[in-house]
Length: 251
Image: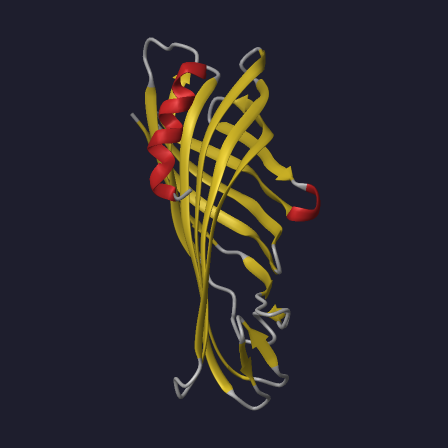
């Protein structure tokens, strides 16, 4: 499964969506300022080291631009596509030996590294509980798609190893909107899945939307994304959490 399959998933979901006489669309670019934790173990022949990408490889916090598109299929339902590319680079002298995908990087080696993650989501939300257009609560079904690439190389280029993971997960969650006045919307959502020994993932956010004029919204909030997965002898843990800002236009 890859991000290019999103249109197929959308087509499969359409029969589930309530009919709507006048759909509207919303485009929302966002900018995210997360801190990160990232660890990975990539073994070959049962040899591997759990690598801390911050302490071992010297990767620092980065900020990311992303965006989402919503199709409002009714007063209380919508389909959403969300995408954010995540990229980290490191350049560090190793203070301990690490083994990655069959290669050994010795103490004192200078290594350069990359971690790239394309994170896409396709979801359907239906807020079937509506209290006087002030409080709306409902469910969220999503397909989350991860395209992950990790590369570690010595600075002299003699050792250069790369590993790719592509996986998709169906998730379930909840979404809440509170509208105390017409110009303000308070929102929160959470979706995720647990798969026993294979791991878990969740994506949660909360924030406030200000609506200065019709069809234009300014957003600020906080988002947490975490996954901890195992695939055979390999495993990866990532946590990103921090504030975000965005501006949306509805038409």
